Image (cartoon, rainbow, N blue to C red; front, top):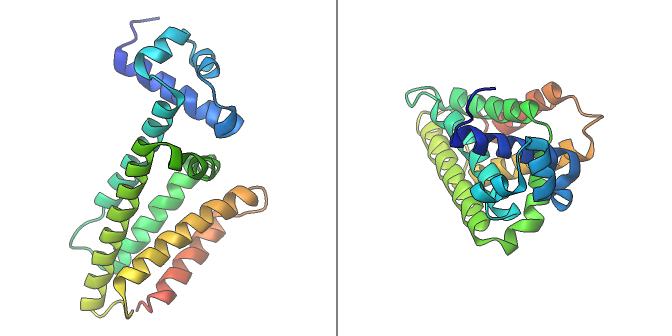
Length: 196
């Protein structure tokens, strides 16, 4: 086996933490199990992360980064309706890539009030997501594609729908057809915006 760089080892630990989080949930996550799953010493985990909380902040930060990259990959000149569809498809792609994301988000909300870094990260994520969607809806309204009274209220409603989907997928994961839910969500959101 070749040399493992610090970046590789850190990613190895984060991937192991995500596996443990998926298997045990937030309450069952502990540093010892993360080290064992990663195949590294307990000291190595503590070298890169001082606590379980720091690992959780980094896992969520990486999720936000992936979602933001999907958002930014939308062509600025594109039709706002198509950009919105692209965003929703990207969101569902992320959920299908790792269905345990739903459980992680539910667990995360229990933890947020006790961790200032995580609270700040989530507030920034929702604020920037709402701002992006508001501007997208305003542009769609300007172009006559969306007909909605309040773009900012519509943006917050879309984010609420997305959060609700996470809960539904967690509660009914064995009974849910993700592709069908994706089609239905796009139809519902576009109808709510009265999109042409």
